[in-house]
Image (tube, rainbow, N blue to C red; front, side, top):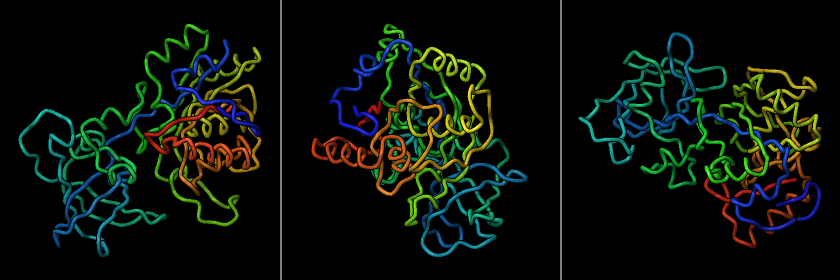
Length: 329
């Protein structure tokens, strides 16, 4: 636990979170659900291995995706997408599924590939058959095991659309929620579909020049009302994860009290930053030179963050997606 701009206040287990907050505080959690957006297969022309990350659909049903393979892909090339076997996917064994064919038809203005699938149907249904959990590359080189199909989701994940989990929420269990309820601490949900841009490294010397890609999000009228009521009673709005912060502060740019909102946000938070909504933050330990680390530095102060990370390293805290968390008050 860390005080904003100040000292480390202590070291606890995550199950202690309800005792570290006060009655009347409000947790705000991101209920996005990770889709099986990682696809693996072969290049039809060379049989060379390739893999991709499906980002969504574009005009006329084309898929937008990132591709990784040896050599250069060309427009008109066909990629074969292999369905994961039952052992990898954690589903009941079934007859072999023939490969899905993707024809590369061009690129977007940002350099991402557009591909036309050989089979009709909604993207979600095809990914359910051919997709895999898009684990970060530092977890078993991105290779998901059976447990990851549920483990890489928060227990409250509801709205499919993310390519990465809002990992601060992975710590929550039914027992934690029950303890929060008993202490008079409520919670509400928003949605921000986490995209790959959130995890792109900061490559500029002047961090103010870094721009995080747009992501779609929504704050319901009920959530806005709960947050406004929390502010009115003088209690703390506790954002769970940097994605929740990004959405809350996007809506907060329009002023308080908050109102229902949906759309895309390209808000990039780095020091200095005027936080208008978020009073406290639950967050994991993040990669160096990441926009997530910049957001935490903006919230707690650069020196405070560095001191906390140094102590975390000394105490052998676990970092990144399946790692430990800290509470910043």
